[in-house]
Image 1 (cartoon, helix red, strand yellow):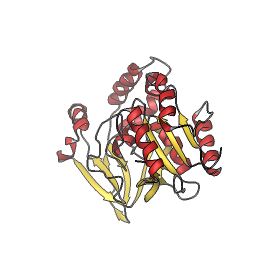
Image 2 (cartoon, helix red, strand yellow):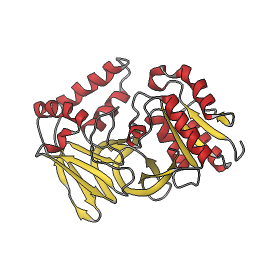
Image 3 (cartoon, one colour):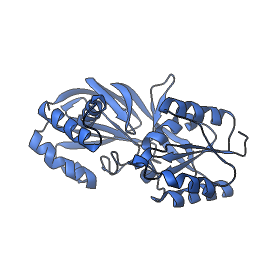
Image 4 (cartoon, helix red, strand yellow):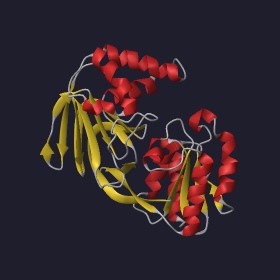
Length: 294
C-alpha cells in the first residue's frame, strides 16, 4: 500500500451477513484508492490494520460492527492517520456515538468527503493499561452483562440469539451483589452491587443507552454503578436501559472521571462487545486519540 491508499477493514459476517452485498458499493463510494485488507480472524484483522498504518496509508476505514471497529482502533489510536467508520454490524454503538450516518453507503460518502476535503474530528478513546495498552471506543461492561457475555461465549448450544437468552436466565439464577474496588481520579468510590460500566460513548449492546450523557469529545469517561437489587428489579430496569432512563433510579449513580481504577474478582470485562480480560483494570480517557473522518 502507498500513502495515497485507503486501507479498508471489513467483516463480511458482521450484522449476521446482511450487509455482505454492500461491501463492493462501499468500496466504490470510497474511491479507487480503497484497498481491502486480507484478514480471516480478529487477530489477523488487527495485525493487517497495524501493518497498513505503519506503511503510512492515508486512512484506515472499518466496515462492520463494534467488534471490527475495536480491532481497527488498536492500530489508529494516537497515530497521525484518518479513521473512517462505516456501520454494518449488529451493534453499531461507536458509530452512533460519534455521529456517523446509520446507512452504510451514506457513511462511506461522509468518509470519502472528509478525506477529499482534508478534515477530521478529534474523538476520545479509553486506554486500558499503560504498557502495550488496549483501546476501546464505546463502553466497557463489568457487571451482570459481562457475566452473561462470558457465559454465552462458553456455550456451544443453542445457537443464535437463544444462546444469549439462556445465558441471561442462568446468570439470573445465581444473581448476587459483588464487591467492587472503584477509584475515580484518586478518590475511593468502592461499592457493592451488580452493575458497572465505563463508557466513552452512550450505548452498548446495539443501542442500550447505559451512559446516556457520555460525550466522546469531552476528555472524560462516564461511569455508572448500581446498588444491589433483586431479580424482579433487574427485570424492570433492563427495558429502561434502551431509553437511558435508568439513571433516574435512586439505586443508580453516574460519575465522570479522567482516570478509573476498577477491580472485582471473578468477572471478565468486555469492551466494545469484545472480551478484554479479568476486571483488574486501570482506565484513562485519551482526549482526541483518533482522527475521525466525519
